[in-house]
Image (cartoon, rainbow, N blue to C red):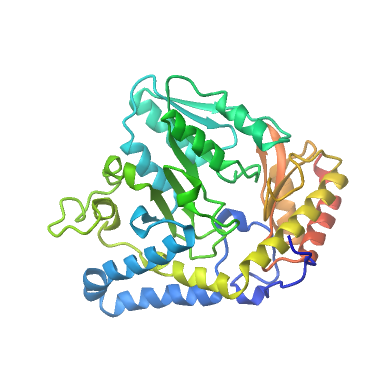
Length: 393
């Protein structure tokens, strides 16, 4: 990585719509949209209202195709392997209903997964008789090879699906997705990756990654408007993913497009499409602001902050302090505290917006550093926790 000061190349917070009085260290939950991108989002809303019939019936197909093409180029895959969804959870809900799961089939996952995804898998397992296996991955993690073996030790003759996060939500750790997908393919297991936090935190090439199915959020680290996400399905599996979550005009369409997969899922009647159409503008915003350098700067800030937090709180790091393990988001274990009261006090007293929560019974704090954050934000977090933690132990 380049040697960058944590304040070098910082983007002014004024380019975003964030409250300037709040130290915003929770980009990972719902993202934050630049003013320029949000204005484009509103432009598309206004375009629809000017002439709704023309917009929805005659313009939208071409506009969605262009947005999908831009996103596909950014993600390193074909446009016809992508469908827009409002969020990754909705995308996975569609996927699980298309899997031919039978009693005794197993979905292998980990105990680091996002709660909404866990609930989705448990729901479909109740419906089908399949089993959702959450392989325990204890902390700290020390080597990618060991992590792969820990996950893979849960594979049995009944494993049909391997599901895992590219970057975990609760622990903010990067999992070795390429190696896991490679092993799954060799074993004839369908690989499904939750990449909600990976898009724009890292360079992605989905064709090279090798996942059968991959979902990601555009509204998080890509900074697109809320309600923009995607589902990637490799062409070999698209015929198995044709049951739409919402049956509408694209199903049994009178005029078929070049992709039945897109026909079945793209058109859901009258709905908000402006967030999807603004995704290309979010991509362009980051390209115009040298986002690779922004990522490097933010990782350095996250790394320094994680070290300082662990030292202050007298905690051990949950992984090596390198970009192989975490990028712009880091999780630090806390001493035994009232996590709800601590999070409330951080905001009410210091205007620090940051998640404090429990994972596997242990309290954590998770800090997200985006291009608008700088050293002052990290220092405010440290000072706030230093004062508050002893009061809630």
